[in-house]
Image (cartoon, rainbow, N blue to C red; front, side, top):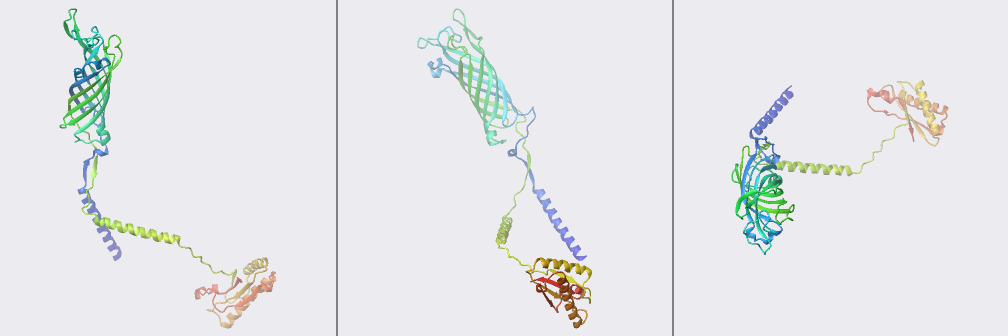
Length: 406
């Protein structure tokens, strides 16, 4: 009872210590948002923005190479509204104004600057104003490649998009006087791609440098042969973006386990355990490689015939056993057998036991001979000791005749 009580007390102390340690660990455990574990998608009304930008465009056309480079720049501007659907993917839509300066092969084509001198006697200066709706799909390369960080200053965003432009150019009357800019029947389709380099001034405001190439289709710039040709424009914009609430992305909350103050003791215990494991593995390997010793079991008797106390005559059951032994002996005529008579030394006198040993062995011999076993195969002897030597309670095992193969 005392042992059980001591064990119960020890278990209670152990469990109490474990519970206290668990409580201390729970108190030290903290939880933080970890963007490296991914982000949670916001609602549809979140992460909207508006962008205004202005810059310059440089027109790329076949005849344009003959115009002075410094005279080929025109202003450009855009205003967009957009939304980020995730830290990586977003879209924007808006209106883009694009000014284009080029050269035409004669003074009679649209956009020709009336009164402007011919260049090389062949080309006339032209100027167009393109304005129309545009749409872009955006990929934030920085968040894609480096992972989302809410406090990152610089972001690189690649985008591709398309749009349509309405062409405006200066019109002149029959006297050659300007009638101002008017729309001409010359709508253009555009495909565009660019890179936005944005710098976050705050969570609400970002400044950007937008570098873009726009492909244009169908602007008349070379006389009648200029329709439906492909042209291009390179643009650079400085922009400002305002981000509406909600501006960031919610990251999963994960537990942060405090580091132990000193892990040297644990490291030492781990090293000792590793060394112990290595030693046990070496011992196991040596044990498996050790040659196995062959143990030769002592050969027992072919058969043992048991008797009741004070009896030397074979019972019917024992006679059947001896006859079966005789059959084995006759099948092996080259083998020799020894018949040993036994009696227990715990009952009877020495003379009685001596006679029982002799009579028991000779009785078995006679029955074997009657069943065809030659006497030359048999040797008869007695043993004064105990057959089993297991004590007085096992004396029944000492009253027997053993038959051994020589």
